[in-house]
Image (cartoon, rainbow, N blue to C red; front, side, top):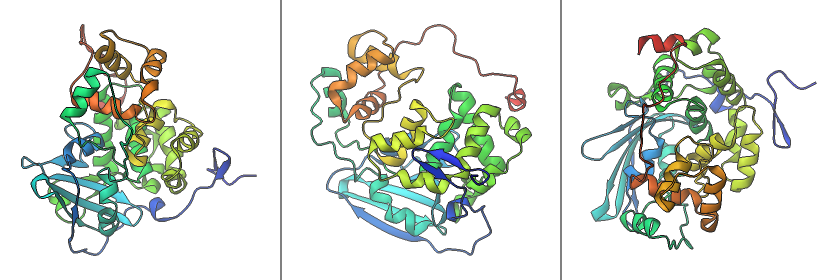
Length: 339
């Protein structure tokens, strides 16, 4: 018999663990600020690179200052951290300050988080729209945060719902169950994704109060129970990471891609099955909306940079004209009666 809570992931049986990612948030000693400067060989458009980590304008885990500084609240394998990232393109530097038990881990991961591991070599588009997008964003890189659970939680919340509904659910979850970010992050109102042990213990009625239905909350609980094991997919080849992620019940093609774009630095992870992506890319490249099968054919020549194409077009604002009323958020869940 398998232990209670065990999940089949790929060829492995994953057993719920009690490692650092699984422990709930606890009161911690004050950690002094740690600062590190990363000298780059190219300008670093930090806001464009890290923009995909932001889940709506009111994301409690991500703030962008008027001067361009980025603040993130993150849960690392060594504990929570508040991170402030300031890119100085003229000097070829990125200055980062971090607070909390996870500060050193976050600083060590900074270059990869800003795309240092991304290799755009061989990406030589010929389509004029993509060529123009690359000229406008020549230093774009795909981030690799190395934090699978942190990317998987909001991705599951965003499954098959409107952006408004997804972002509201994410905000409610962090405000109800996320811990205050350490250091100045607390004063700024930053919150950290609930630790896996905390998330797995949320009662069903509170998921509904967050506006998250049972199908998604059950997927979230299953993911939380094997969070430590999920982190081990970070350095696997994209196809193998995809296979293992999709072996987890509730994680499909779209969710796996959304995670790999952020946690794994996978420049080929296209958001197939997205309500807008196929239509927008098809419109940008052909002048007509396309379906997923047609999108796959359009992007095939760009392997292993298919997601790079998607992100470049997103940054240029290429999108299918929106006509008619927007899809309304569902109103039958308790949380949406207060919207």
